[in-house]
Amino acid sequence: MIPSLPTSPNVNRPFVSHAPGHWPEATQEEWNDWRWQLKNRVSTLEGLEKRLRLSSEERAGVILSAHKLAMSITPHYFNLIELDDPDGPIRRQVIPRLEESHHHPSEVADPCGEDAHMPVPGLVHRYPDRVNFLITDRCASYCRYCTRSRVVSGAGEQELHTEFEQAFDYLQKHDEVRDVLLSGGDPLLFSDDKLEKILSRLRAIPHIEFLRIGTRVPIFLPQRITPALCQMLQKYHPLWMSVHTNHPCELTIEVREALERLANHGIPIGNQSVLLSKVNDSIPVMKSLIQKLLQCRVRPYYLYQCDLIYGSAHLRTSVAKGIEIMEGLRGHTTGYAIPQFVIDAPGGGGKVPINPNYLISHDKEKVVLRNYEGKLFEYPEIS
Ligand SMILES: *Cc1c(COP(=O)(O)O)cnc(C)c1O
Image (tube, rainbow, N blue to C red; front, side):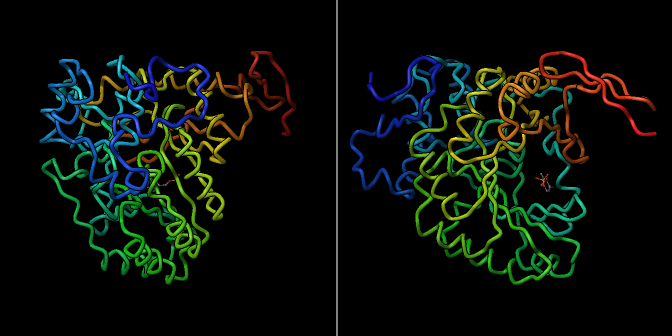
């Protein structure tokens, strides 16, 4: 047993480092090099079995993943995997399982109806003032519940063919677009130069006010958040970032340092979590996560009900569970830590907020409210 590796679930969840864990032979220079991390990702059955005892469901899942959504796990993230718990919260996010081949009748390849909302290949324009620009199909590691698994990783049948020049042209002509979200895949896998070319093209369009990058790189590959990257990004302000963290154990010392570096360069950071069965579907886990995020200067933004992507039933929870968790957070910790629970409406309706009901009744005279302790209060209505 390697002493720095995680064992059973950690109740206090302090910020810890697990480096170099399974890679004692790596020099510090190699370990801190994001390209070394990418080159040494665990992406084969042999690589996995060298380090972990797999369950039969996992073994079958890994074999099947070669033709669906690839498996790929950075050494940094691999070290967070629970060795002794095949149902561990880190493990379930990145190691494929046989259940991924089960297709529930409500599941589809494109749960958010994105393909039908692309005026240009790779550019999703659903809302009036903002677009989601899918600039790459690659990630540092692949989340097993990926909403874009139909095009991401290169293992499946469909491919993402982003038309960059057409997209810039579209954005230039559509002056109602004031907000561009770069996503994919993970934009931070591009080199600094390649990413800067895209950011500068967008900044040259006068009506684009607000840039965002959606990324899980600070979590999967914190080594990528170099001072040079941060210095490049800060030239394109206002630039915000949405990261994706699901479990407090993902917030290691290295991740905290990467997030702080981004924040120190003036980048406001929000977090998007996906509610996942046996990963974060409990109030104590979610509370620990959001409180740790504030310590990293990250504001919890959205909590997503898991999309109806093919083969995700074993990771989905009930909507009621999400509402119960939101009730367990609101009032019990600061509002800054509370994300908005949303369902991305199947078929392309966009994000719909889902809230516990605190408004007991509402008529011409008054509203009756329920607070976080369940006590009732009245407030007069103006007729
Ligand atoms: C989520 C999403 C956005 C961004 O929505 P915000 O609520 O502004 O974070 C934009 N376009 C598409 C298609 C999206 O799915």
